[in-house]
Image 1 (cartoon, rainbow, N blue to C red):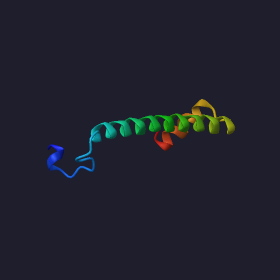
Image 2: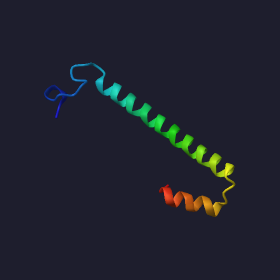
Image 3: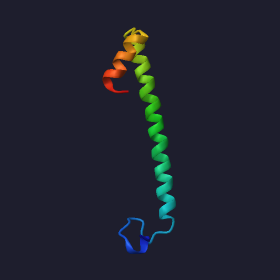
Image 4: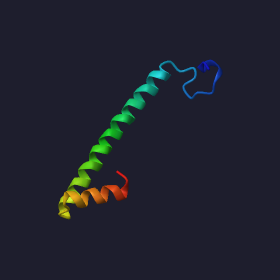
Length: 65
């Protein structure tokens, strides 16, 4: 369906699709940064608690990673 006949929020705005694509790309970049940060936090916590590789495996299985 073309935007001329839908209720898209960017209807009638020039560059609406480009803006959407830019926003989506930015969101994907942020999500990747969050994933890296989560992994770093996990590593720090494992080190703080002195977990072995086997214990880390158990933890990650339980939390579903």
